[in-house]
Amino acid sequence: MSPDGASRDNPRTPTFAIWVGHFRDNLETQAAMEREIPWGAPCTLAGPDRAAFVRSFQRFELGEDGDGARLLAKARRAGDPEYVEALQMLVAEEQRHSALFRRGLDHLGAPTLSAHWSDAAFTQLRRALGLRTELALFLVAESVATDYFTALATRAPDPVLRGIGRRVASDEVHHLRFQVDRLHVGFADTPRVVRGGFGAVWTVVAAGAATVLVVDHGRALHACGLRRRQVWLGGMRRFVAQARAALAGDAPGMLGPALADEVAAATGGTRH
Image (cartoon, rainbow, N blue to C red; front, side):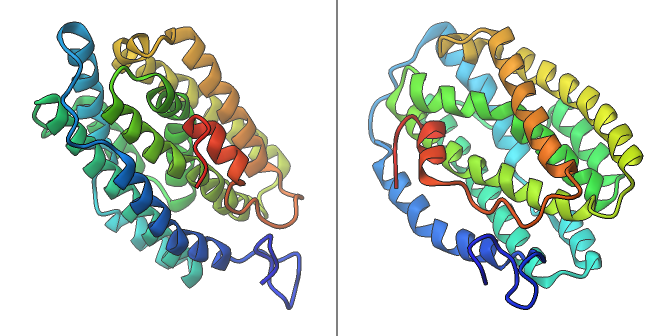
């Protein structure tokens, strides 16, 4: 296996073994970061700021949960065992994010939600679609939310919330690249005109998702010192960059996991 995930037999043919290795190695990094979170510290938030993060964490706890059974079934039908193994590990990481937000709600003294319209709508939409389109929706969600996680990591007015933000952001920077790598494979044989049309519709969906994010989490963003417009624009810029990479049918190899400097930027300078 070459460093870019290409096979030895054909250096331009990507495989997902590099991602399987990353997700295995990442377990140790995740555990170390979670040990650094001051779970026993008293909550320093009250009033509107506390309410803002309760609302925000309740939605993320709900959205990150789930066993991914339908998604994994679609992936198995695609016939790439290494990708399926890597995807199972990614689903497990998302479940750990849900558990982190749940612990954050415990820290804030608040319950979880059993349902929310935005999560229900997103879930029903993606379940009705094929693997490629479902992954495209995940890329949208992760692209537009990345600035929120970085803001949480660097600006949240509570040390436990900052620790949760760092922990989640350290994974999401890799998840974006993983989704791009699989979508790039999925679009490899798609005619250019079809890719262009898909990209246009995809961008409209991303704009809607970014709008929902800044409305749903606007008060938490404000508590972190960010404006809704700033986060909306940042999310759309990130989405456009990721979508272009996914739709670049002639690009060889894989992105692979993020470099340490990229992870450090997403988590506020913390390197592991």
